[in-house]
Each structure stands twice: as C-alpha cells, then as structure tokens.
Length: 131
Image 1 (cartoon, rainbow, N blue to C red):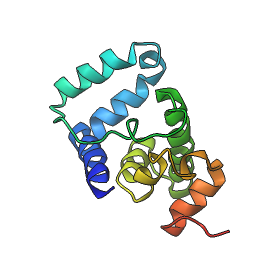
Image 2 (tube, one colour):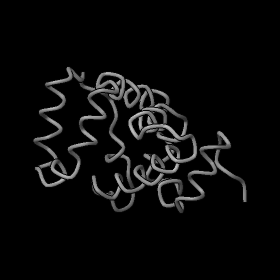
Image 3 (tube, rainbow, N blue to C red):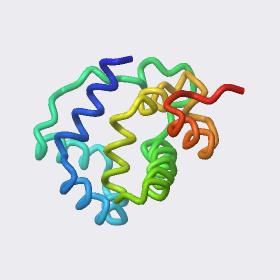
Image 4 (cartoon, rainbow, N blue to C red):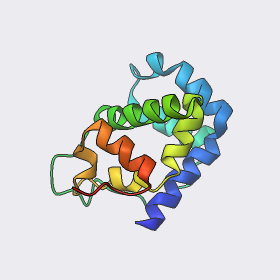
C-alpha cells in the first residue's frame, strides 16, 4: 500500500500547484474530453514515470469510473478547502498526499463507499473513525 501512496503523491508533485490550478480552471472543458487521451497527454507533458499502481486489477467488485472516483475526491477536497480556507489546488495536493488517498483507492475496502462527512471527519482525525 505504501508504494501506491508514493506514486500518487509523486504525480501531484510533478504537476505542481500552478498546473493543478490551471487544470481546475479548465475542468469543465476537460471532463468532455476522452479521459485516456488526456491522461496520456498529461503523462507526457509532465514526465510522469510509469508506476506500479493498479488498484483495478485487485478489485473484486464493480470498478468505479473516473468520474465516480472524482466525485468522492471532489467532495473531500472541497470540504478540506472550505474548512482550512485554502485554494482547491492546495487542498487537492494535501488530500492526495495524505494517508486517506490509498484508503479511498482500495476499492475492496469500505472507505471508498463511505459518506462524504465520514471521509472528511476521518481525514481531520488522521485515521478512519471508529463506529
């Protein structure tokens, strides 16, 4: 799990805040594009190395779409940005660099399916909340 975490963090760092801010400004345009082509273009533009992250191969259930995953992260990032009064780009970097990102991406666990407030409160606590 730690190797997956490092790969996501590295991708965010390769983009940098300026690029993330630019991508967020154009998100309403990019969401209409072919996601595979966009990813390929960004991998080339930002020199993203080939990683080892493959949470889809290990998934025993329905694999969420890019947009399903994006909604989970969008809600958490918006909550963090609002709570800390920071730009979305900073919140995005913080969330993707945190302990919760690999937890959300482990689709065989329940974290991905939790409600947005649970994810946010767990994020603030620094660990999954207990029942």
